[in-house]
Amino acid sequence: MSRVCAVSGKKALSGNRRSHSLRATRRKWNVNLQKVHMVIDGKPQTVRISARAMKSLKAGKKAV
Image (cartoon, rainbow, N blue to C red):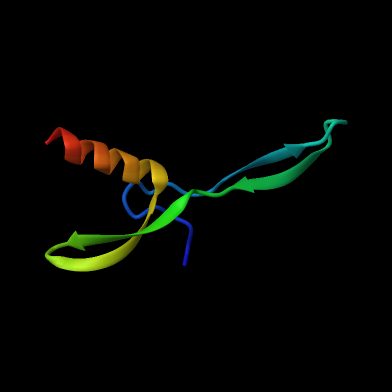
């Protein structure tokens, strides 16, 4: 299963790890994915969404 958010489409980012001597080696920042049970099209499903997307969905739910 790929590390992609089902709501926002966020993926892992890549960049350089920098040592004290500024040598560059490749590293990866993964998305903070959480398994959440949601009702989609009337059916309960388990989806993997990022923590940021989950926070946004909860905030939108309170506003309505």
